[in-house]
Image (cartoon, rainbow, N blue to C red; front, side):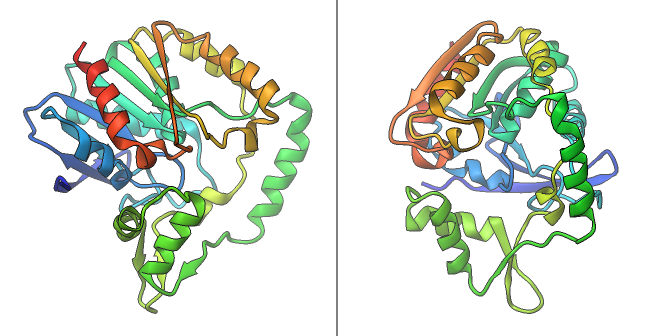
Length: 293
């Protein structure tokens, strides 16, 4: 059964933020944060599988879905953290929350949990590995790439039909069923005035960040997290495509995870990076067990 959601728009740091809600307002809260080039409706299948009553709060990040874009040249992790802080203050000013993030959202919540540990009751990270390690020597090339990209406005491809959008989602994730792809396509894109379907994402998200990823700074934040933390990884994750060859990347990932106190790890079988689409039943069962302990 598909559980119905409701939309709300709230002011967050000068932007109109779209926030999706499932469940009764007086139920225990779970705040869910989606990944890059995704939207809040991405969590529908997991929410459908939850057995208990929960108030699930899932915003569209800035520049995604129905949330305003800031008209910036590119996007920064600190802005996502600032938005998250404001959203938690809006919905739960006095109580610690259960916080879940997928991919980019997992990276944001992992840092945030170490910066404001008192705000987190329990933390759930779905494949938020962090970014590839960088070295200072990469800085000149990174700045140059950013400057070159600024000379031409980025664009996102459009699609002739909603079915083409669904097909695009299935190309990225072949495990995605026709039914789930059709559902997601109506939230991931919309028809424009020319009759084309355009992705609900600011093209500026495609621009390279001029700032290098300082992994040891991130690990310093992870170490400050005091909440019980549940880490999910998919057995068919695509992390190796951008973190490097599996043997070396596996060592680095395990090194990073060693910085998280109170950590429990779960490997989800027959799933890829979008594990909340591939195995929502298993994911929901483990999440609920963890939150109810």
